[in-house]
Length: 402
Image 1 (cartoon, rainbow, N blue to C red):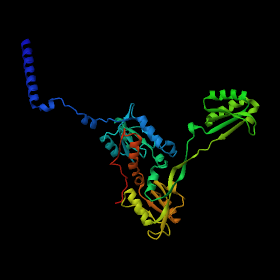
Image 2 (tube, rainbow, N blue to C red):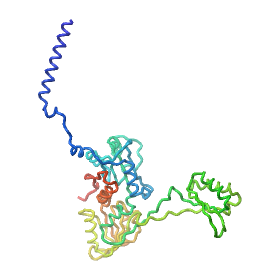
Image 3 (tube, one colour):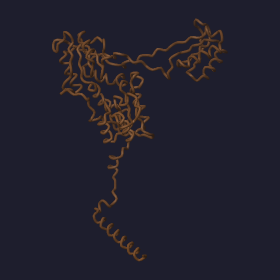
Image 4 (cartoon, rainbow, N blue to C red):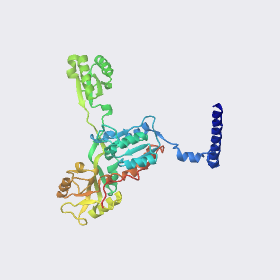
C-alpha cells in the first residue's frame, strides 16, 4: 500500500514538472520579463492633476448659485460617491442618458455635469426597472458624481440665455424676469430698539445669548427719539418671535415705544433672471434673423410661426424675447417682434402669432447644448486646470427633423 502511494506521488510530481516546463516553453520570454513603465507612459494612464469633490462643487455653486434656480427645480450635487472622492475628469452633457453614461465610463470621467437633472421626480427605489434608476446605480458603482445646474444656468449672467442671445446680433440685453439676491444667512428682518445705555447693555447681552442673529449697538446723539443707544438685530422670521419676547421681558412697558421691526426686501441681481429681451441696434429682416439663429445653433432647419401681418423679407425685426428650453410660461404676454425658444404649446403659439409676434422653435435642448462648449473653457480656468473638462460626443436632442 505504501509502495503504491509513493509511486503515485513520484509520478504526479514528474507530470507536474513536465507540464510546468512545457508551459514555460510556450510563453514568450518578453512576457515573462518585468516591464518598465516610463514616466511618460505613467502620465498618460494616471491623472496627475485632480481636485476634491467639495472644491469642485464650491466652484460650480459660486459660478451659478443654486438660489438662482426656480423653486420647483432640483439643482446642485445629486449623486455623491463615498468619500474621499477626487475629480480628475469631468464630462459635460445636456441630458444624462444611458448612452452618455457609457461614454463617461469609457472616458474614465468621475464627475458628470448634466444641465438637466437626471433625478427630478423623487425615486422610491433603485432597481433595474427604469433607465433613471439604472443611471443612479451605475454612477455609484463607477464612483461618478453627478451635478445639475439647470435653471440656475438659465438665470445667471453669462449663462445659457445670454449665450443664446449672443447669436442674434449687437444690441441691448436684459432679463425678462429679474432674479433677486438671497438674504445673508436667511436674515429677513431687522429688529431695532432705542433705549438708554444701562438698558441697552442688558438687552444686547440677552439678544446675543439667543444666538439667532447678528446684534450691533450704536450711539445715537440726535434724532426724533433724542439721545439713546440703538440696538439692531438681523434675524430670521423664526428668531424674530424670540427676540421680541426678549425685548418685552427686558424693557417692560418701554418696549412698545422703543421697538421697531423692518422687513428686508431682496435686492435685485443686475443682469440675472429668466429669459432675455434683446433689442437690436440695427433691425434685420425675419429671413436674416433665421439665418443667424441657424448658424449660432448649427441647425439646418427650425420651425417658424409667422406673426399676423409679417413676412420673411418685408418685415423688420428689432426686438426678440427668448428663453432657452421650454419658454412658453416665461414669454407669454411679452411684447416683442419675435419669440425664440426650444418649444411652446400649440395654444401659446396661436396667442403669439395673433398679436403679430412671430415664433421660432428650435427643439428643446438645441437652444441649450451649445453653451456647454463655452462652459468647458470657463470651468477649466475656474478649476485652475486641475480637472480635464470634456463635452459629450453622444449627447443630442431626442427629436430631429426628417
